[in-house]
Amino acid sequence: MTQRPIGIAGAGSIGCFVGGMLAAGGREVTLLARARVIEEVSRYGLRLTSFDGLDRKMPAAGMLLSDDPAILRDAAVILVTVKSADSPEIAELIARYAPEDAVIVSLQNGIGNVDALQTILPRHRVLGGMVPFNVVAMGEGRMHRATSGDIVVARDDAGTAQALSVADLPVRATDDIAGVQWGKLVLNLNNALNALSGLPLREQLAQREWRRLFADQMAEGLAAIRAAGIRPVSPTPLPMALTPLLLRLPDGLFRLLLGRTMQIDPHARSSMWEDLERRRRTEVDYLQGVILRTAAQHGLKAPLAQRIVALVKAAEVAGRGSPGLTARETRG
View (cartoon, rainbow, N blue to C red):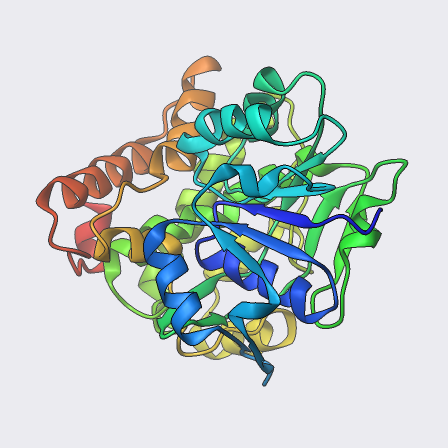
């Protein structure tokens, strides 16, 4: 990788955390962000904290921030961190302003973002990626990584994944990014459950009734995915096929197992919960919606996905944040 900047296209919670960590690791970083984010970071800088004790302060002067997409004009790599629905719009901006030799890396939830970007950027190399952890915007420039895991990026001859790795933010290369993304999608089905519950993630997963609902939803999704001939790769040390069974374990056994495989701190909540709280459009159509479409294509039903989509959309319309449902109310 050259010494040209790394651009963050859509610097929200994930984009600010990743961009801030790259800048702290000595990379030149440019953040394309909304005015609200620019104002906050310009005033407070970025404070990057994590469940594992990380606490770094990155001054705003150490990065270039703007809402003008021309900020991408010199980028060697552009990390796309916008929501899936915004992929076409950000791709148009990249096509207009970024150099053709810039490598585009999608660090987005859902399936199909690479294709959406590549369609509009046929001359660019577009790589898929996966961010396993969630980041909570705590206010006053603080971005808190609340769960564990390493970023994964599709392997390429240029070694993009390795070149993006910095201290405290490892980036691993994979030869099966499609499988990794499908595996992440299955785990991300809990995003909607967490949003509907209004509970911190660790508290939600501590309740067996919520875990059973998550497990049933995963089993429904895995059946649809396998009918399509897709083999999802688990983003955690737990085998994907066993995860629904493990979620159904009694509380004590589950806590013991979770503590050995994944760390979640009390601040962790899903990005979909944050979307409801901020009255923003969620990504439920790119999570449960994908399961619904995949199931329908193979003559299967996905009643849990259908109900959860309806509940999330109702919460969006209501505009009152999380509805605070119980697991039983969510299941229906």
